[in-house]
Image (cartoon, rainbow, N blue to C red; front, top):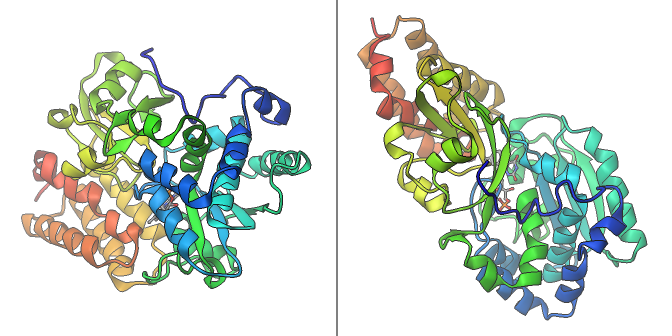
Length: 407
Ligand SMILES: Cc1cc2nc3c(=O)[nH]c(=O)nc-3n(C[C@H](O)[C@H](O)[C@H](O)COP(=O)(O)O)c2cc1C
């Protein structure tokens, strides 16, 4: 296999995740010590310099987000780790939590010190119940060793809704309410959990923090693509020889992911399409495989880096059928709070189903395209805004597959 660059997975397979001394022996919690000796503003400035952008999907600058919460005046602030990982085909956060829970805890503790928070939550995907004890054991060990000071961390399990990965729906869920997104602004760093300044970051984002603090923001910013530096963990699924995970610098191309790391398409078949970033990712054709996986480069081709899920399809796959199933997923997962998503996901699924069964007309195809474009600008949250991406990208790049099914 091609060579990886491991930052967040640096300790993978090297330590016993339930043994804090293993983590300490590999310089664990040194970054937290270093961070605590720095002024909060300088610490945040270094994280900003690293230009670490959120690995949960939206790609927001982490240091920038921290600075908003740091500047907010409040008697209580919170740090939340988004470990909902509900994106089908993604398991990168599980890899980190399962194999190196202390890197996450250290990252959260550094954030807590930086913004002045004393309470943290790990919002864990409901389907990961086996991780509750791992995380609780690691939190207890870190606390007993005195690394957490006054900062306490609680593990909260989600109930399995995809929308609860959206940060404000997640906050509602922690507050004991139905998991539905809030209107924004205000954003969580200003008004989050129980109305207090709150940082929500992804597991992989937090796992980068100890290394950034240890080696410096400048070092991190020099890795990979300058506009989205560092590494990214990808999980490969579908028609690919190596159905596994990789951590690679962000200037790696999609082509390299599939052929160098993934080992190409099995059984001598040809590549047809790849969907990157999870269910709401665009489908990418052969012509665009030279695109780097960095956030901005992907945005330019109408795609996303997203969660890092990579679904490869070979030439035998029926794209229209695959997208119909995805449309069914979004209809099911729409929380129903806003009309464009509630109605849009249902109508999209209905139209996709009609086309897939061979009863659709070119007018239906046009309507589907228009509906998708309206949803992407009118839905309340990222679920409805991104749900049309598989439809729109396949109508654009795999138009012949749709035309072959028209009446
Ligand atoms: C429908 C939906 C699901 C999401 N699921 C997740 C998730 O499972 N994990 C995650 O970290 N971010 C998820 N996000 C993104 C979060 O809203 C938020 O941007 C992220 O947690 C911020 O952390 P980061 O800046 O470290 O990426 C989701 C967003 C949407 C709209």
